[in-house]
Image (cartoon, rainbow, N blue to C red; front, side):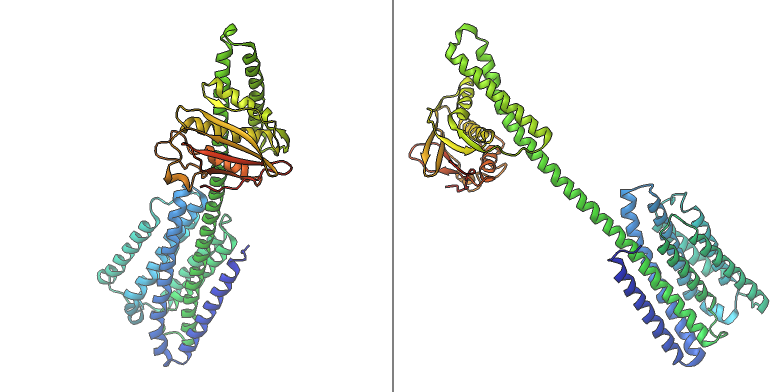
Length: 488
C-alpha cells in the first residue's frame, strides 16, 4: 500500500504520463500523415528507451547500497535482476531504433523480430530464476556486456546475412511468436509473489506497452493513429518504469533514513549510558579508595586509637551503604533524589575521615548547619571537591568549611595549589575539560555542576586572596539545591 509520501509522487507521474501521451497524439494527428508519424516514431522511441536506461542506472545505485548492507537478501537479488533486465531492454530498443530502422522499413527483414523474441525469452528466464539465484556479478557490468553483444550482433547480422523480404504469412508468424513471448513474460512477472504487487503490475504493463510499440515499427504500413498510439504507449511505459524505479529508490532512501535515525538514537542512548557509567566509576573509584585505605589502617590493630577506629568504622558503614545505593541505582535505573533537611556534618564527616585515611590533610570543623538536599548527592558533590583539591592542590592542606548564608548554607573547599589554568576557566564545568597538566579525566567538576544545577543550585569558582582554587556551593535550607554556574 502506498504511503502518504508515495501517493502525491504517483499522481504526479500519472499526470506527466497522461500529458505526454496527449501531446504525442496531438502532434501525430496534425503531422503530415504517415510521413509525419514515420519521422516521429524513432525520436519517441529513442526518448523512451533512453529514459528506461536512465531508470536502470538509478536503480543500480539503489542495488549497490543494498548489496553492501544486506548481501544475499531476497530484495537485493530481485533488485539486481531488475537492473539487468532494464539495461537489456533499453539496449535492445536503442539498438533497434538506431541501427535497424532503415532495413526494417525498406526490407521488412525477419531479424528484428528474432532479436525481440530472444530478448523476451531471456527476460522470461531471468524472472524464473530471480527469486532463487543471485546475480552472478555486477548487474551493470552484466547488463552492459549483454547490451554490447547485442550492438555487435545487430551490426554484424545485416552485413553477414542481408535481410530478405518477408511475406505476410512469415510476418504474422513472427508477430504471433513475439506476442506469445510477451504474454509469457507478463505472466511470469505477475507470478513473482515476493515482489510488491504494485511493482509487478507496473512492470507487466510496461512490458505489454513496449512490445506493442516494437511491433508497430513499420509506420509506413500501419495507419497513422495505430502508429501514434504505439509510440505513445512506449513513452508511457518508459515514464511508468521511471516512476517505479523512483518509488523503489525513494523507499530505499526512506529505509536508510530510518536506519540512520535508529542508529543515531541508539548512539545517543549508548553515549548517555556511557556517560552515566563513567560518572558512576568516577565516584565508585574514589569511594573504594577511601574504604581500602581505612581497611588498611584498621588492620594495624592496637596501633590505632579507639576513637579513630570508631570514626573509621562509622565511615566504612556510611560509605558502604552509599556505595550499595549507587550500585542499586545503576541496576534499577535513575533514583529519585531523596531531598530532606540534612545535618551537613553527618554527611561530610565520613568523607573527611576517608580522605584522612588516604593520608590527605583535610582541615574541617563541624558547623552544625542544616540544609535541604539529597544526602548522597551532597556526599558526591563534596567528595568531588575534595578529590579535585587533593589532585590539583599539591601537598598543601585542603580547607573545607560550612558557613551560614542568607536562606541557606555555603560549602567552601580551598586548596593550596597553583590555581586553575586560564585556558580552562571559561569551560571549567564542562565534561572532559581539563588543562594539559591535569592527571584527571575532566569529569569531576562537570558531575558536581550537574548535581547542583539539576536542582537549581550553584557551584562557582571564586577569587581568593591566597594561592590555589576555591569552590563554593550554596545549599538552601527549605528548598531544592540552587546552583548557578558562574566561573570567575
